[in-house]
Image (tube, rainbow, N blue to C red; front, side, top):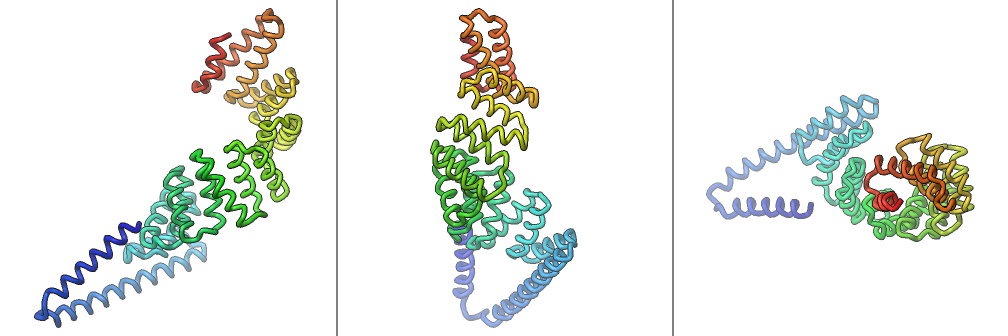
Length: 337
C-alpha cells in the first residue's frame, strides 16, 4: 500500500514541476484551466457525497438494494471514496457475499491505507474466504494502526491457528485476553493456542476460565477433555465427554469417550463407545481405528487364538484407510497384523 501511495505522490510532483518549468508565457491560460478543473472536481465530489449520504439513509430504512446501487454510483463518480467502498462492503458482508465484501474492503484499504476499519474488515472478509495468509497481512496492517483492538487481536490469533503457526497464535491470543479478560471466546482461543503448542496445563486453565464466562458448548468441553487426557487426567476427561454426550451426542464425542475409557483400561466400554460412534457416523475414521486397536488387543490377550477378533480388527482398520488414506501408522499396523 505505501509503495502505491508513494508512486502517486511522485507522479503528481513531476506533473506540477513540469507546469512550473514550462515558463511564464502560458501562465494565465493555465490558471483558467486549473480553476475549471477544480470546479469540476468539486462538483464530482459533491455528487459522490450526496449519493453516499442517500445510500446511508436508504440502508437505515431497510432499502438495502437501493442503498447498494447508490454506494456503487458514488464509487463510479469518485473512485477514491473510502466511505462508499466501506458502505458497499458492509452490505455485501451482511448478505454473506464475502467475495463482494473483500473486493470493496480491499479497495477501501487501498484508498485509505492508514485507517483501521478498512484494513480490519478486509482481513475479516479474507478470513471468511479462507485466504488466511492474506488475512493475516491485513490484520497486521490494522493492528499497526490500533494495536489494542480486541477483535483484530482475537481474529489474528485465530488466523494463525488456522495456519498452524502456534507461537504467533499464542502472542495475539494472550494479547486479546489481556485486553478483555472477561471474554469467554478469547479464553477458548488462548486455550486452543496453548494446546496446539503442547502447553496443556495452561490450556486447561483457560478452558476452565471460559466455562465460567460463557455457555458450555460442545467445542469448549471437547477441547477441555482433550487437554485433560494429554496430562493424564483420564477420569476427568471421560466425565467431561459424558457431559457433552448428554447435551449434544455426536460421533466425535463418542470416539473421544472411547479413547478416554481405553486409557482407563475399561476396554469393553471403550469398544462399545467406538462402535456407537461409527453407528452415528460411519465415515468417522478415528472410531474405526479405535475399534481396530481394541480388537487387536483382544486377539493378543487370547494368546493369538481369537482369530475372529483379528479378522474384525483388520476389517475395521481397512475401513478407516478407505475413508482416509493418509494414515501411515494405521497402514503399518495393518501390514504388521
